[in-house]
Length: 327
Ligand code: NDP
Image (cartoon, helix red, strand yellow):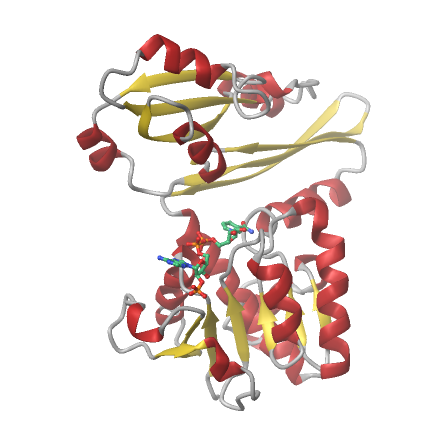
């Protein structure tokens, strides 16, 4: 069997994760990284990985089976996914839930006439969590679905707290409420408010002379970001920030709790504990890149989400091998 040839578009946290993940999958090979920056300024994890300018993709290279798009969801992917789907099979991790239908339509309109296969919005949420919400709801027609996130580093909330006057640096972790999870696991089907689902934990380095109580009040009362939650603020030194808060942990739970007859409770739980959010997201993207290449080979083109892709296509094993050893 021949390898699936993959290109990485955009080289940040996710791009580095995809480079590493391809190395763990012998049926995939890495063609190189494509970046908007000057290629010689981009240092890859593996020194031997070729780095090319984005413009190298314009002509439509025939040595690439799938591009894994690793740009940001805010401004990169709405532009890059449709443009590249007009020439290549692609996979992206577009995570702006409210705009997924719009993104799907734009990518599908580019992919169909080009005859390419484009998997959008994969990763873990959207992605594996979306799949598990649908499994839960399809299998337990009567019940409630819960998604809890964390413990995880939130980039958006960390940025927000770093903009508070008197803050020199800091990070924010989102924590699922243990009490809420226990009630859901017990099959109580509780109605949970925003405040009851998650708490927020901030670690902050103060600027010289800043008043801790003023900074704390400014953070916990910030509308939308912190005010709707129980937020704790802990002050630490710049050295502690560097030593203890460089990782990008995340994860969470999808729980479907329902009944199949009067008083008969059934609970389904899917949970992720991730030391590195981007490395895990990248691992999911790479499995969907394999599926995209296989679908393209049998002429199944157009935009797809995780809901459209059979699980066996994610595995490096063949359908025959899966039937023989894994059912
Ligand atoms: P980054 O900010 O690290 O990278 C985004 C882009 O910015 C890169 O593709 C790169 O493009 C550019 N870039 C990266 N580093 C630099 C730099 N030093 N200087 C200038 N430009 C740089 O984002 P992440 O990789 O962390 O995340 C990408 C997206 O993944 C997020 O926006 C999020 O939407 C999505 N995501 C989805 C998840 C899911 O579960 N579905 C989970 C996690 C993330 P270029 O090389 O062209 O310059």
